Length: 196
Image (cartoon, rainbow, N blue to C red; front, side, top):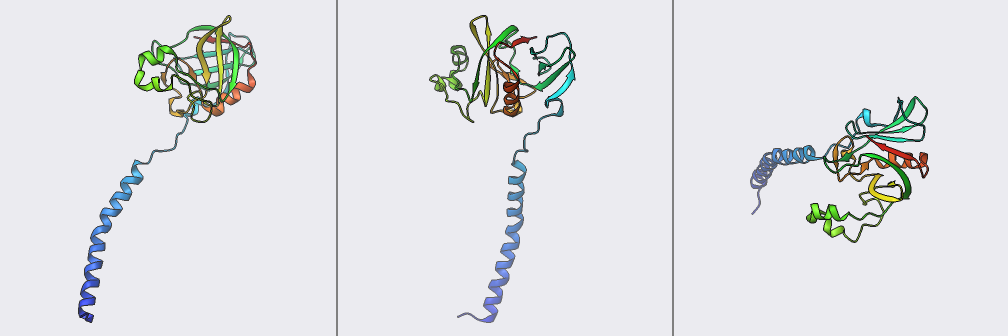
């Protein structure tokens, strides 16, 4: 039989249990909040900007892998500079090339060397990945050729924006998708590329 006293005792016990459980719940919520990743922020130095730049003809793309910059030379003394991610040591292109092909939302297939180096990571993509937001080449790709031969190196977008300013790729030059879209519109086929 329920009495006022038993109901009051039960209510007080419930309040005490709730009070005891609250700090644990609050702590768990705090830990979940703490684990959330901070939104990606590109360092100011890697944002597109006009800079003084000499030594190359207008229309030339110059990539400085050591400093993680790509320059689109616009006048004899000025260039538009973008931050880029570049290849790991030993996997980089160096020298001159020409852009012979451009693609929007390109498909991607790992090279045989990529599959050989890391089969667990790349073998499952041997038949290729269709273009789209999840594709490693991102929104646009500019294909580098030496004469008529494809070098298999690209200037392309990325699904990993945090890689800008780092040497982490398999040799290609990565840009944020918004930046590579901008470059894509500014650069015609036949544009020279110099990778220092």
